[in-house]
Length: 169
Image (cartoon, rainbow, N blue to C red; front, side, top):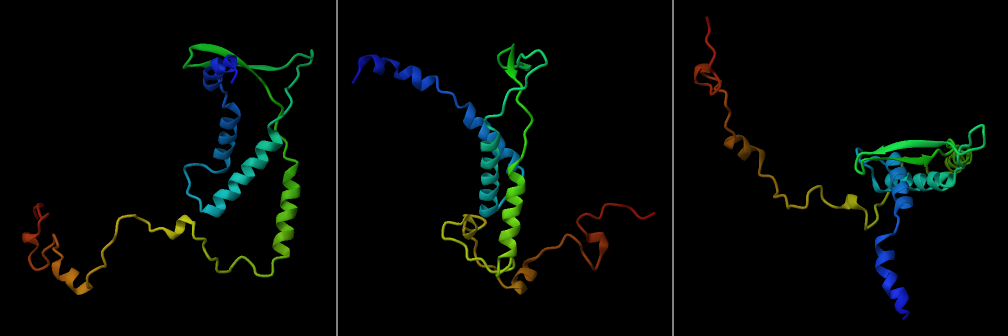
């Protein structure tokens, strides 16, 4: 191998930019927020919408001022403690929405089965897993549970109730 290239490997290893990937992950968060829980099919659909949105808007033009110069926006970096400048991109346009809605509508109109049908989950579907991984023992009979239950209220004599500390006047 070329020794010159081998000496530059650490440079390439440490100086890679992940900005495009981080931008895409931010778009995913707009479509599939971490604050909500989604089923696998819904999550995949939302990720596909995020990919469509990202691909449609990743090469937006820079806004130009009246004098022909690029419009810039200043940002202050708290971490770096300095100001930086970024180019202002054009507003997003969504030309694919009408085509996407048309395809969804045509798919629904041509669907003979409808939405209310039983769906067989795939073997890899996480909904097949238990809600908890810990084993849950089978419940004992209800009569046994009732016999073991200790109430803090004494129905015969309220003075013997555990929390009975107020005075009647």
